[in-house]
Length: 300
Image 1 (tube, rainbow, N blue to C red):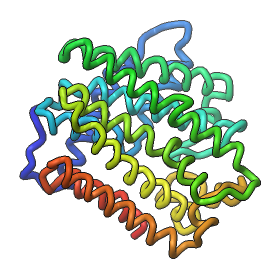
Image 2 (tube, rainbow, N blue to C red):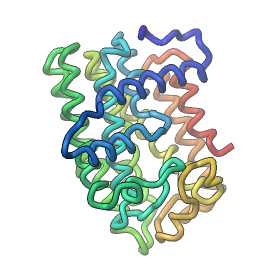
Image 3 (cartoon, rainbow, N blue to C red):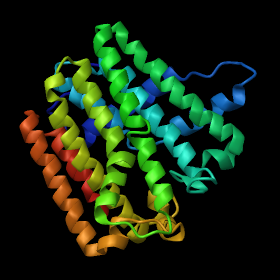
Image 4 (tube, rainbow, N blue to C red):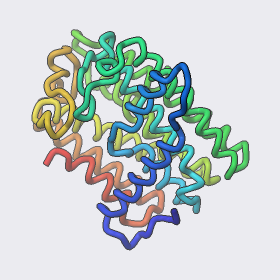
């Protein structure tokens, strides 16, 4: 597929991106006869189970800022979605959030059992780095290594896993806003940072990484605050996951800390700060700007 046509309406561009990512994910994790068939099925069930594909799209968009085509950046985009899928499998496990639904379907451990779900998550995690290595077919090895290092940092204990640990240790306790912001920075924003930074690094635009990560920081905070709000005000049928689980699990959120209205104001403020970073990155008004607004407008 050729570069995205900037003249297309946002909704059409989004569908093109999502379809391209879905096809690439399907091809990256093909089924084949094997004794470990069940874990492969569980991996595909979770990886191809829908979703907005925001992280993959961010890889593609930020790579495009440096002149990289969709096809060239797609291995990195798929890797980000594999990391995201593995994290959701593990989040839903009984030892974590114990959620039975994910995107309107049975969670992986409900469908396949807890042990298989655990292995499916592990399988997707390792497959992500194998997939990212395929980017070496299009880019100098040093760029790919730098992207792998960045993804490892943001997905690991200094990033997403660290945020999940803070979340678990904070259940049933009162924490301050600074701690909550650090938790969300690691738990949600870190993987968005990896997506934006990977696109920049693969395209040879390491100079854009600081601003790209700053954009992802504010986008991640806004995204998580909106999730907090929707956990109270959302429709389970539309969201495809249980409502009220934060309260049931005695979790700290911006809603419990600041109240509903202040949380909404903060989400808007973070969204505007993300938009400001796009201006500094030299991103033309259009897709990224619209995407940033759409993630906030899930509240409407």
